[in-house]
Length: 264
Image 1 (cartoon, one colour):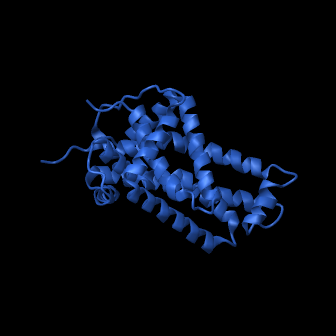
Image 2 (cartoon, rainbow, N blue to C red):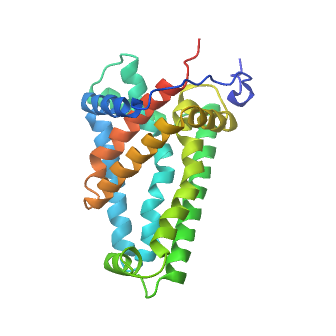
């Protein structure tokens, strides 16, 4: 018998209103999940940190491009954490938390089958497109308006961040925020929802927006926490990304669980 296509499910998921401080609880629960199943999470974080290091080595003479690439990491991070959402779901269900079992859960989530796989790949492609758009926009802004060439991190700091005149850094941050806000609103619970429930991409995105509109202040705090912790991970020569990436991924699963009413 053929399985139903999730995109045809007529029932939109219900969303909850949450307390302002709920994101702090998500961080606590995310830290608990990481402590219970550290191997998949830390392996995931290490892989991303090594990829970032390779990107930096290859493009260290073109920091005007790297600045956008690293900040664009925030846009595509949700889809990269799919396996870790699956680990949190397995822990929630009481499945064995042995390293081998949890690693198997994460691997299976990266190669799902059927309609769920198609929806995850479509949404991932949209996030990648948004990230690429920001990288190109950031690179254009820096190369066109910086008073001198920006080829190294020191150049970016001197010519963009600490420039005595002009609006370049403020404009760069403002434009990044304007572009990131709708991506965050579209994805804050969308990937865990696609993994967990029979919904299509449009349904997941609309649910994510409804969560944000129902909880603007808690979601703003959550976005700030994600940005600050990711920034700290990047600022520590990428070493901080090893624990931060899985921590935020597990916490994001609990954000989804708190904000979206379970199926009955």
